[in-house]
Amino acid sequence: MNKSKEIYQEAKKYIPGGVNSPVRAFKSVGLDPVFIERGKGAHIYDVDGNKYLDYICSWGPLILGHSNELVTEGIAEVVARGTSYGVPTKIEVEMAKEICEAYGPIDMVRMVNSGTEATMSALRVARGYTSKDKILKFEGCYHGHSDALLVKSGSGTLTYGVPTSPGVPADTVKDTLVGKYNDIENLNEIFKANNDIAAVILEPVAGNMGVVTPSMEFLKELRRLCTENNTVLIFDEVITGFRLSYGGAAEVFGIEPDMACFGKIIGGGLPVGAYGGKKRFMDMVSPIGNVYQAGTLSGNPLAMHMGLKTLRILKENKDIYSQMERKATILEKEIQDFIDENKIPVRTNRFKGMFCLFFTDGDIESFDDVMKCDTEKYAMFFKKMLDKGILLPPAQFEGWFLSSAHTDEDVELTIEKVKESLREIYN
Ligand SMILES: *Cc1c(COP(=O)(O)O)cnc(C)c1O
Image (cartoon, rainbow, N blue to C red; front, side, top):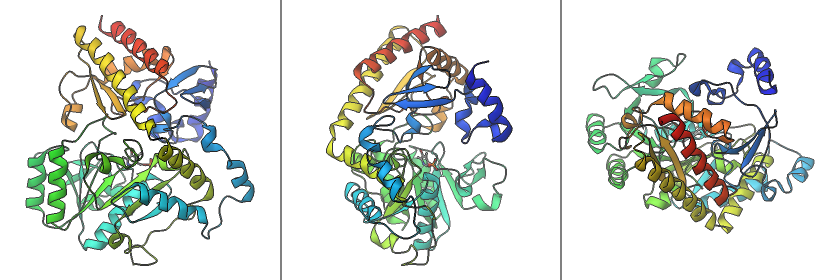
């Protein structure tokens, strides 16, 4: 038995499923997880000494690669000064200013400790501001694990959500409507049937059902309907923020949300989230307003240090974005060409530097399209890639995360291994 398996056996005794977040268990690819010892740049090393080219990158935060010295620089001094005070620090102000200056549509931001907290809190503010209860989310978008957002659409024509997890009372999701991503008609029907929607929340490019790009018309219609109905439009930029561009999806599409949520990249690998909006919304938040939201470790110096360093490096090196896009484009083109030549029922999908493979040959515009994927084939593919030293997301419905540390050679190697793996599966 190798060390990963040994640790996994022990882990399962003390941690549910042996992991602290479900996808890490490799369950949907039918394998046991590898346990990681360290990471450097684009690579991670497991406890058995195997080296992997990493396309998980902590699910997005590590846009500058593992253990980037420019990011970790000075962290020991921060620790030496103290790691949390429960009273404010200057670096929190610098962080808030950095985010507000980067992200055009927002004036103010509040730090929290996860993306889950960010979306949950933003929705509370939107409901407080509008004095309305209903919220609309889209099937296939993930916004963390708060009760009101763990929903899928009900059967038939029902737009009301049903809980996707035991433990979520039906009453908790009774005000959560579930729409179809990229479906303008469906969107209009929902607004017609509900004149009391406080907020719409979406991933402005979906990254949690694989990568699914919204149509410009869909985003524009969303903006129009929200304005018309006094509904707060919330972009969940936990993945897209500081990844698609320094100004996030709002900048890329030229569509202004009323509020936005961040996480992942802005923590530089430490636990962080943030939500922000125009002043009129953020003035609702306590202690100025009455919408309560708090956090013992929110804005702690370690997370602020790593996050701020990451943001400043990105700001000063914007070519990181064009380089990541260029690399993702090479992945997309070379793999898609190979798939087409060999008539393999797989397709690539990419937006800017966000990329993934779908094991279906249909177009991918919606959650329904994504659901047509052959997850067993993906599991086979994942295992072959892992055996060849490339760690992909251990689930079909996730994007591949590139970092600035992924070199052209890494990309070429990946393409070769993808071709080999697909050949082995489909021949
Ligand atoms: C990861 C993610 C979240 C949740 O963030 P956590 O820090 O895991 O709570 C929310 N929204 C999106 C779009 C995400 O990708």
